[in-house]
Length: 264
Ligand code: DCM
Ligand code: DCM
Ligand code: DCM
Ligand code: ZN
Ligand code: ZN
Image (tube, rainbow, N blue to C red):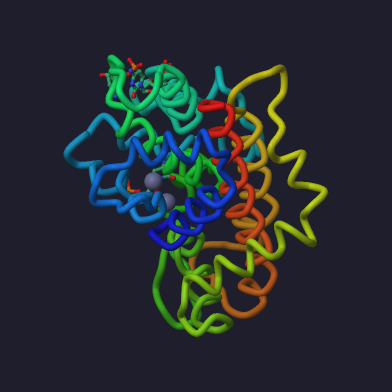
């Protein structure tokens, strides 16, 4: 996701934290965040160049056309190093944060960075094309037009769908967009939310579930009907926006549920 998507997911998440998780998050946030997780939710994108090892941790490449994901088969970087993908990173930073022992005690890890990475990667794993095909790099090599503008398909899903919705329906105001998703979470999706929060087998977080849903959504909605030089306009926007809204909601709900289990 671009900054708006990450902001939305972290806003939703922070509003759903337990008292214990809320306190821990406030302790761990850097001073400049002013207790606002959403304000630093894109930090991991800003440090890709400084922390070069981290750039492979934003996505997963799955085999072309298969539309399935398996951790052991797919979670690796371009050199084939196992665990270096967004699902592995979510597991890793969750484990690091489990060593949090209260405000005044020290961990062997930088838990501020762990919180910012986890919050960002929980968002990215919910972007369908961050669990896309290998040969097109998650839609990065597919040229399309977003209305009249040249774009790559990956960017349409990272940013354009969200920005167009914001402009058309919420007066270019991100808070209106977030409010609308939060409304759906407590009404239309209320029964589903309990399932989203649940993680099998007493696990703290379940990135393999999120990634499996992601490649399915990529095949069913992101790639579907799109070829090189396709023009994507109202029909694509109107039919895909509900999927983007759903994935942002799931990302926010699951980030909160994971943090609540970590600090609970
Ligand atoms: N990782 C990390 N910090 C660590 C260990 C791992 O950032 N201390 C990253 C790179 C790993 C990925 O997370 O390949 C998944 O880790 P693991 O295989 O331990 O789940
Ligand atoms: N890495 C790490 N922990 C961090 C940041 C970076 O372990 N907080 C690095 C260490 C490794 C790289 O990630 O060089 C890959 O990890 P792994 O060996 O688990 O794949
Ligand atoms: N990306 C991806 N899958 C890949 C490569 C990149 O999902 N195989 C993501 C990471 C960034 C965006 O696509 O969000 C652009 O990547 P880059 O900056 O590497 O072009
Ligand atoms: Zn992206
Ligand atoms: Zn990212």
